[in-house]
Image 1 (cartoon, helix red, strand yellow):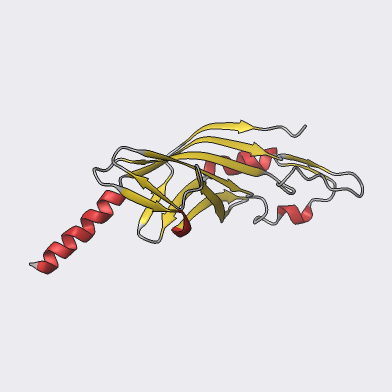
Image 2 (tube, helix red, strand yellow; image 1 turned 45 degrees about the horizontal axis):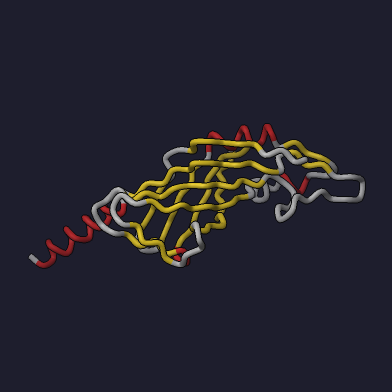
Length: 171
């Protein structure tokens, strides 16, 4: 009987955690066009060379249980397909206010922000000499984006949608 109760509670816990959802409210793309002079590299402050994606999302607790999200146990993984190959990148995550733990009561939300530099892991940046326009590369990557929030304590959330995409031009 105790074993049956333990199994039931273990499964119920997984079901409750599965009811957390994440939506990406905004995706801003920076540094899509790269240009450099003969000896000088153009670097947008804090970004380096190549596209930078900045995500703003919301995690919602759709359960009737309070859930604690732990910043230090969390990974945000960005999956995408480029030139027929599947890539994944660990992103830099921060909660609004940089709290170590975020307590989500039932029906409550938490804002999350993270960044990614997808072209770095593809090897394309190594071949850039003087200028490059990543527009076509990003058009190939964007429809294949999959974003996963993962915590060691069995929290796994896959973003269901990206609502707004904005290109920020380098000027």
